[in-house]
Length: 353
Ligand SMILES: Cc1cc2nc3c(=O)[nH]c(=O)nc-3n(C[C@H](O)[C@H](O)[C@H](O)COP(=O)(O)OP(=O)(O)OC[C@H]3O[C@@H](n4cnc5c(N)ncnc54)[C@H](O)[C@@H]3O)c2cc1C
Image (tube, rainbow, N blue to C red; front, side):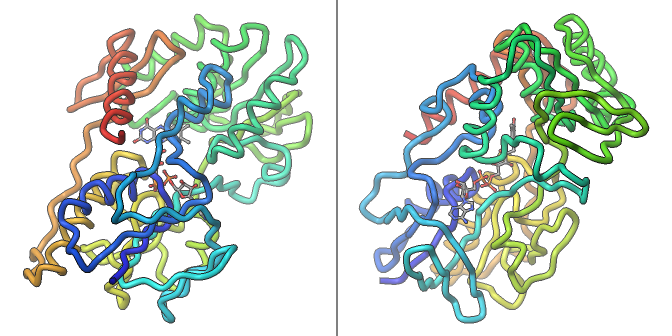
């Protein structure tokens, strides 16, 4: 039996397996390896950390199919020259490899950031953030570094979870989400103003201590700091003998293969693609990888050019009742945007059960 090995059961590999199974030749099986015994819904980790959703609501089961073997283990090393993956408990050979291990925080060399900030990048770290938030004394101050989608979502969810906290959101830009229309930014800013979240624009965090965040020439007393100011591929991927593009992501050919290793594919946050990393991009790319492998296994010629990965836009929440979206170049705000986001999550869970 030949083996397609999928490293990481995130959005990319979940979609890959879903699309590959109906095409899988009878002499092939799939092995999925993840350190967790379920697929974590990373896009919801902010709610787990804020304490507004239980862990069971932010995960779905891995595929239950005779052709898919699921291994719960930690990947230590990927040797693409030898064609072997080293796990904490053993090793794996593969005929085709799909690396979808996601990303972790990037601290941009800011002293103290790695040691003194909390994270929402993994389930384990989101749990630790939740624990810390739960232990904060009344009226404590929480600093959130980075006002991208995840920073905005954790700030608003935290406000909803704990009305007593003072929340400071350090935003690098002049206005929130500057790449989207001013109306969208103004709406998000108004929500924060009305809900007593302090947004500090033009921030440049230069140091973090256990109880202080240093921003430009100011220092802010905090009881806890959450870092949402940048990501990079996980270390085992950074250690690959490959070329790396912006953000430390692996450079690929148009078929999403590592050049020189045409049986090794990289999907999702670890891959250098023209779009910023997101679950949406990971899924679009995964669908293309399934098509490419199907063509190769059936002996068909690969397309001269791969189609563009289509993006739908963004959807963000501001607590449980409001949200914002930028879809097909249109701004949607308020309850409808929030309902859209909940609907997408519901559909995703349904599609994976
Ligand atoms: C708070 C937050 C909100 C977000 N909101 C959105 C959104 O609204 N829309 C959107 O499109 N994107 C959103 N994103 C981004 C999105 O979550 C990621 O782009 C997406 O998860 C990437 O998918 P992936 O398949 O590359 O990796 P992931 O989904 O991160 O999966 C990686 C998997 O690899 C496993 N893994 C990692 N290292 C190892 C190892 N050494 N051994 C074993 N297993 C390992 C992990 O357990 C995990 O299951 C958000 C992210 C965050 C943090």
